[in-house]
Image 1: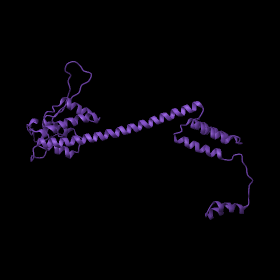
Image 2: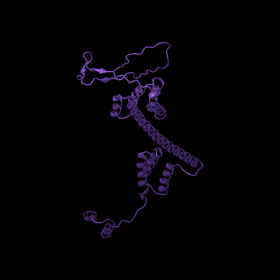
Image 3: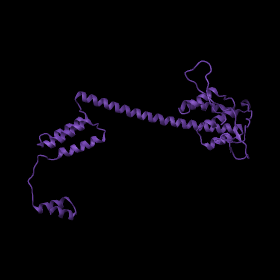
Length: 279
């Protein structure tokens, strides 16, 4: 950890909000061939390692047109990312406003520290000493980020358009349904279902107990939402109740041979079951 914010003190007049922006300034590399990291005596959770600060080569953009072109292309891609990806908008916006982007080496390191690329590719970029090669890797990384951000934005737009279209269709259907009901052209689905059940029992001679059960279920059905699972359960029960021929009586037929013929006609096999029924 090269920097740790322990406390923030107010300076000058109070502000409604403030933001601390930390920008990288040095490259740090562990010295190869040193002893393994050892715990610090004052804090076992920290480790002592020997590091060095590799100096950046001083490169003039005016002396290398290809490096200059890559440098400005990286900056241009960063600006495009700000307008494309809402995930990294804040961090890139802060970088472009406060960070010194004139140094190709530091710009490449910055991209390596903020890119969403693979860890292996980021480490390769940060380990590269040649500024031109590092800038080339940085440009490749940020172009990948830009393409991914464009794809993400496209998917987001398509999903939002689909949801908006479905929502608009639903609202229009509800409005059309309300207009039809207002004009008396169409009844509410639930009202139509309840009326169908009432028509089914109209004229039938029901016992007091059966009539009470049907009225209870109709009242229950009217209070349920059609989309609820319980609505379908109640509806199925009413369908069964209203289709039973409560007041229809038939003359009993005790002829065993007729019963056997009916069983053989309606059911194949099941001889043991048929014999048991005929007994």
